[in-house]
Image (tube, rainbow, N blue to C red; front, side, top):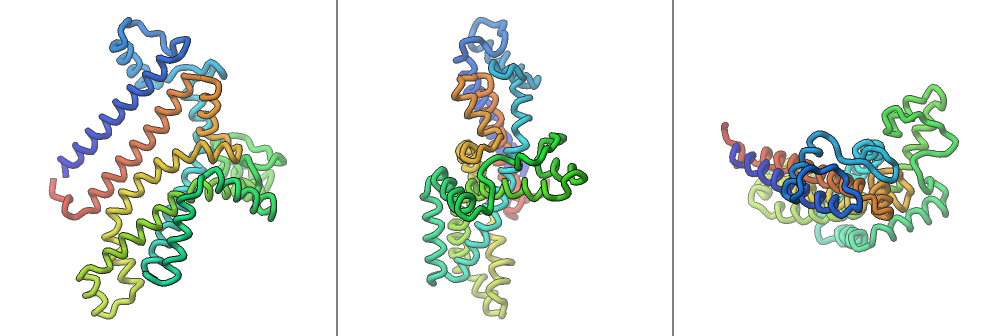
Length: 319
C-alpha cells in the first residue's frame, strides 16, 4: 500500500512539474514579463516562476489589473456549481442507464439505450447545447436561455455561489430567487454532462455484462437471489474498479467541454474568463487559468486513484 501511495504521489508531482513547465513557457510569450525575474537564464527564471506560484503570486492581468488568482477565485464558484451538478448527473444517470441496459442485455431496451448513448457521444457539445436552448428555452419556454439568475433579482455576492447566495437573500425574495438560479443551472449542466454520461453508461453496461458471466454470479442466482440484488451487491461492487478509472477521465472531458458550454449559455465562470483571456492575449490569465484547471484535474485523478486502490482488497495490506 505504501509503495502504491508513493507511486501515485510521484506521478502527481511529475505531472505538476510538467504543468509548470508548460505555463512557464506560456508566460514567456508575453510582450511584458509577467514576473520581474532577476535571473538572466531561462533555467533560473523557471525556479523564480515556481517560487512565485508557491507564494500564491500568479501575476496580474493587464486587462483588469487584478491579481490572476483573485480573478480566478471570482469566477470559480460559478464553474464549481456547474461542474458539480454536471458530474452528479453524469455519474447517477450513467450508472442507472448502464445497469438498466445490462439487466435487459440483448433486448430492444438494451439496443435502444446503447444507440441513444452512442448518438449522445457522437454529437458535438455545441450543437447539443444549441438544440436544448431551441427546444426547452425558445420553443417550450421552460428554462432560461443564459446567465446564472434573472435580471429581476439583485443578489449580493456573499459567497459567489449563486445557489447559496440566493438562499441567503430568501428574506427579500423568498425562495423564488433560488428556484430561478436552479432553473438557469439545468440546461448548462445537462449539456456539459451528456458526453460523460453516455461514456459512463456504456462502460457500466460493458463491465456488468462481463461480470455477470462469472461463476460466483451463477452461484448467487442458484441461491435464489433476485437479479437486482445480484447486480447491486455483487456485480456493481466488482465493476467499481473499472468505473472509477473511467470516472477519472470524466473530469477531463468535463473541463474540455466547459469553455464551450459556458460560452453558449453566457455562464460567467472560469471557461468564459479563460476564453476572454485568449481572445485578448492576456498571457497572465491564460497561464493562470491553465495552471488552475489542470491542477484540479490532477488532484481529482489522484484522489480517485487512491480510492480505487483502497477499494481493491488485493492492494490493502497492513502498513
